Length: 78
Image (cartoon, rainbow, N blue to C red; front, side):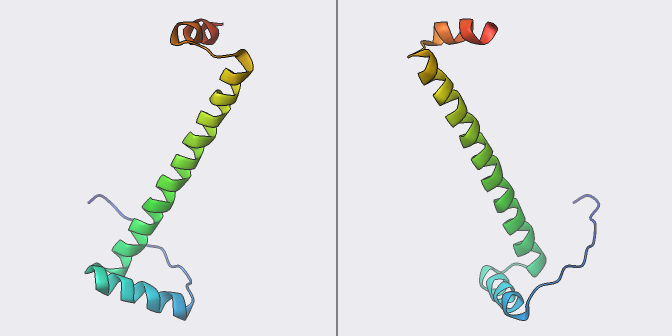
């Protein structure tokens, strides 16, 4: 692993207890559980952004009519 930044966060006692229990159940450190949760949240945000872009282009396609792949290349080249 490369360099790391050590940071302090505040967390409620109840949530921290759940975090410790989860870490113990999964055989991981609390730090590893937090990192995994952050990575999962990041993936969900990326997925949401991708779906937003996909929906945007789906709407554009419907506005232009049913575009074939050939027509799509022409449309995007404009």
